[in-house]
Length: 563
Image 1: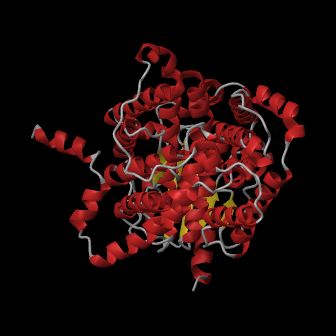
Image 2: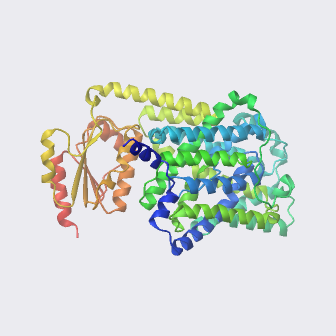
Image 3: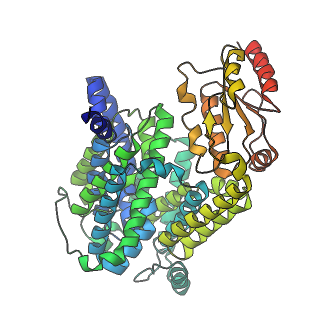
């Protein structure tokens, strides 16, 4: 009996690879995963080099990270299709650490962050990551996008300047001083790279736009003998050898100074990997093991550091590419790392000719992609507290420090939450959020009144950032998806932007499964916020009705007219 809790605890960290292996892995699965792994490797190759250069490291560091950490994340992780490697979110913090403490300081930061992630997973803190307020995530993500954009101005314009300051205002002051040194050929290559990526995304979205942009720009630079800076001219020959285990000089005496940056790296790795895993779950209809994923991310970061790599995490875009290419097991991610290794060994002599302006074009597109402009603009229509959290996090990320931005954003979000709870404390005390038709004892008889093909749930309490994730797996409770799903919200006193985001996600999942969503009994504040954030009724998809009786009548009608 005593071993049963131990077995249950151990299962939280069981890699999905073992689960797949027990289910049975066939040759057909290997072929599908190999195609997906090759596709993702083609996408990851230019990104790994570009992200490393933008972080202040050499391009092979990015490749080593994608190979070592990417393999470990897939082999040990709690997601079936997660693809790991360096990501744009780390660029600002890594750049500052390398400037202040050297690459040895970054190795120590990455090691500490890896240990923090392992500890967080073992303490089962993975579920807490789901409670991150959406305005904080949107604010620091948009701030990171601005930081990435500003870091690429030098290479995009070909400015002749020795170094780029880490601070935002100092960086733009330096750009202004050297603006007259811009090179028209470097600018032309940047524009060409952007044009190739944008055109391919518009007309051939399945083609590897980043890789083709680098190829076109490199060929044009060589044909026209454009005197622009390349990977080879700045970094020399790329090593065409296996990543080697190395332990560079690490300033252990400065551990205390590096702890805030280590926490930021661990935080970003944890949040981004779990967000990516949630997105992947939605695409494949699976469910990841959040705590096992954190442990795998920690091991991968320790491994990357010991091979001289950068911080790593789950990459949402590459994970989505993996799923769309047919990958459905962790083997695809492991093969993606193997293909990257083969590319590095075979193509490194050619990579030296890639213009840095072309890599800048790639990162400008990456910055736009992660900016989530529409989501940022949408959150600006949220209640004042959410807007305050969003803008504070955004401006602190851009002008000061990512660690400070996250800390202040979380503290302010907590105060906003406490203020809202103070207004509704009499209705939220000791009440479960979602109770399957358990509003009061009389409600237990209402399931018999539901027509066939109709299901109903009651939300009892505020739908805020700390509770919005309870809607994530609501539809998974039904063995046979209903035709109409009634969400009863008459006991919901308040909704914030995360709650509206959760409702939109629920609506999208209902739409994908052909389920009509009916929301009944909205109180004034939830209705005002929902309308303010542009969530409106849609014929055949979403309806708002005044009460449960009206919802039942509408459900009868919808079931009657459905084929």
